[in-house]
Length: 398
Length: 130
Image 1 (cartoon, each protein chain N blue to C red):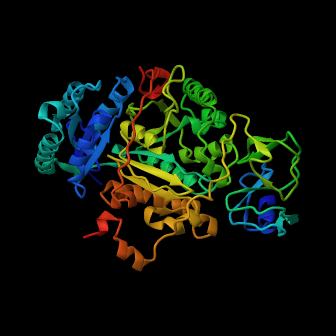
Image 2 (image 1 turned 135 degrees about the vertical axis):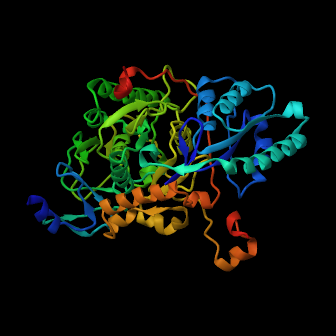
Image 3 (image 1 turned 30 degrees about the vertical axis):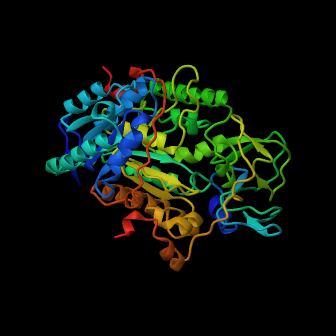
């Protein structure tokens, strides 16, 4: 495995130039700039809101200084609340080329697109010289989520991801699973795997917080398609999602933007703290993918039964199809066929090993299905988080 | 040993995830009227069980816990007979209500184009253009 060496010592598996819209008002200009480089590694991310939000600002900083990112163009309207000066400063400090195109200063749409596109063209050449050096498995950070779940997700793809997670953690890599709202009903089994009793209490508290949050919202992380696929209750869906975590001990509980201090298995708490504000915690799967990436994930393992087509900006997404019928219908959008276990054409151990090998191949530069189709979904909305307590990362405290 | 005996006498479309479970998962659709073997015992399937859906492998009383993966997945809202489909009509969460609508699967009338037709209207995949 080889990685792009960044000034902070972290290594990236891609060398992407990111175009950021700082508010919805600069989205079109940013998209026009990025779309001129469709077949180059140029991705579009942004935050739609005009009101300030500490979480969104922190997320944006983490994403723009992610090891897979080589340079950043920030497109600002000129009057939004996101502090583009502070963001650009943090990116510059990280050793990356950065520029801010302010539409109101540049004189409107056309001039901003021209100036922005010229900077991107020139900077793409500049970042070709980033050193490409050896990268070890313990430097790799892998995230896992499931979406478009049906009852097969918890029988094939999720447990296969669990096997791959075990192999990764054994080799010193960092593995992150998420969605405490999809672990409702698994509190006790999860707590038994915590590295310390204090962390066990934090894990249970995080899931209780998710249950309270969803109860206030009226319903949980359960879409009508889940029921059509055979899942009846949130706890049944949870047990299927829980299998993604494999069997390693849980080293810590982190929140969006926290970078795990060492290799091991971590749970990402994506449910906001405090009273319920700003609506549902995660609008879609890509909200969670963006949060996993903000925690440093180089690559995302995505298990789907019903069939999803999404990828992501910044980090490649590997789609592992749980349902053999879905796989036959949507094969070109899928990377791996885990559903074949149900038809006796492979065992869980074989598919788990395949997920592990495919993860390393993707990290070495092989394109995933969503990358081939040009998918680069991204979503970031308002949230509020309190910092994690020392008991959430027992091994790094003190 | 008991497990092996059960596997040998169980229809291969039924997946029992834990010995504690009172439901099985269908790994392929089972049609109403079929008789399936479970641990050597025939069970008459009363309604269609699509892939991924659950089948009661013994009678479950109203208010009894439904067990899958060896863990509770909710309570039976009415008596469930062996061979019956276990789903939103007879099982409810101990945590949160399940939101469903019955249109899913019935919306969308478009079918994929034939290869010739797709060539006529232009290829949607931008990477395959060149």
